[in-house]
Image (cartoon, rainbow, N blue to C red):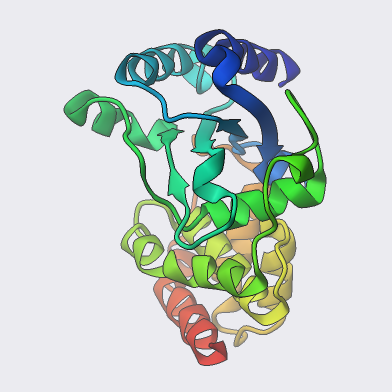
Length: 251
């Protein structure tokens, strides 16, 4: 993992130069630890928006070193312009996002452009809590805290998109919904497996096996190794609907 992170960091330093303020890990690596299918999540803070040549080059170079086909984990690299998130406002703007699930979109439409990204509220909260630095100053010296209300708002705003992916991405959708429920009720962020344990204790017994299996897969299996017993997958939609109803009842 460290070699892949170092390589990605080297690309960001080389391509962004003096525009780069800091690079910080978030996601599983700082909340609960990496699991078999976990991405390596990095957030870079810059002074100015990237130009098209930088976007094209970053996509090409990150793609060449991302994922099992390149001999490592999948990378998720987010770039934010500091003045777009400090002072904090909602929704925050993501200047650039690379992820394996976006590759077909890059091939069709070209490199990513800036867009509103509520999920930045969660990512920034994670990395500020972790305080880990790959490049630059401490994150608290660069980024502003996210208000608790916006952390909850960002979590809830992602629900419709998640539900659309329930069929092809059952594991991650159920786990993320469990984490949203946890955040809405507690005002904090935790790991996916911890959130699944918490939520599983609050689910009806007939729905709990779907979330429990998603948690087991998260802890033990890559995507290539993932299997679902038919009777467990069959209750996944009802499990998701129940969690969403509880989340929306908390608002």
